[in-house]
Image (cartoon, rainbow, N blue to C red; front, side, top):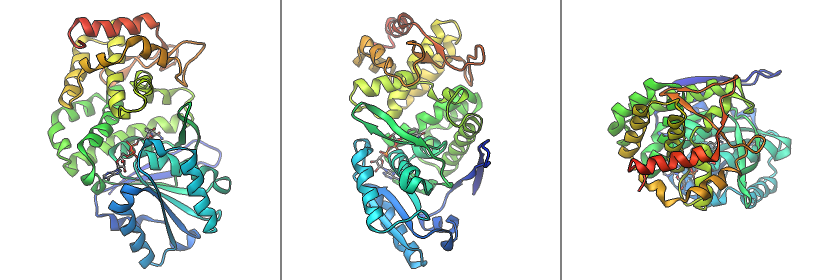
Length: 374
Ligand SMILES: NC(=O)c1ccc[n+]([C@@H]2O[C@H](COP(=O)([O-])OP(=O)(O)OC[C@H]3O[C@@H](n4cnc5c(N)ncnc54)[C@H](O)[C@@H]3O)[C@@H](O)[C@H]2O)c1
């Protein structure tokens, strides 16, 4: 088992551990806090994960003498909303869950964000444990304490920073995950490697086919490295006032693509196109060498993500949608700019930089004239 500690520099020196394990699901219970440290355990999951793992886990914990309640909601981003939150909270209230209830968020990023937000607000805040079951949730969403729900006005607009008591990433769960969702999560890991750790980028390049075959050793390495990098960033900047913004690489364009596709494109895939266009911007601005851009492009092509597919989106609409970004400053859209593989541009201590719309357009057109976009 691999254990990574997250230490947050607050007055109460909050701290929690992330455990990366490679066991069958029933071994999870060995890591849970002692039975007498909480009044009841509420497993929140989606309908799909409930069938795959939730019911068995809940039965096993009950047999062990835990008081367990299992609540689920329909799978998918469109259920990460107010209504699901209210329904789950009402079920908890009906069952007299109190301030000592412990929530266990069992599922992908949707479950983690929603269950975490319930934990942040139920009786003014209760404890929760993240048990991510998708690669995206293991490498990204379960770490860092961002919780929330989507609204008709945009994604993740209502939420809270609420740190889990523990994160248990059990690689075994990934065996039932589709290739599409595996790649979706891998892109978030690649994103963090591109900005922080060139060696890990080359590791993915070299071992891609084993990773896509879900070989546990490689999954473990990727999760461990991505989590360590994210943990380091979050420890320095829990609430995204400066350094944490590096995690938004590829996301300014990625979020815009999600929005204009009405969220039909998966988050990771939108971020992959975002990475390509944002890397191209850095190249046009003279920061990134073309060979590095091409290395990223080649890796994504091997994942079935081709720059030319970006042409399905209108550049004016992309630029317009970037104006809705939460991170916009004084009317200017901010971008993380690559300097090299594993290194970003930092100017006056800032990791994000305003980029003129015309440059974004030029980057799109440059890709097009080089036949990357048709
Ligand atoms: N909080 C953060 O810092 C943060 C960071 C990145 C993304 N997110 C959020 O994460 C969400 C996306 O997460 P996601 O990609 O995990 O989506 P998801 O939670 O919708 O899971 C994807 C699908 O996989 C299924 N699934 C989950 N685990 C499975 C398993 N082991 N085997 C088979 N199927 C399984 C789910 O039922 C679902 O249908 C978005 O809402 C995004 O906003 C949050």
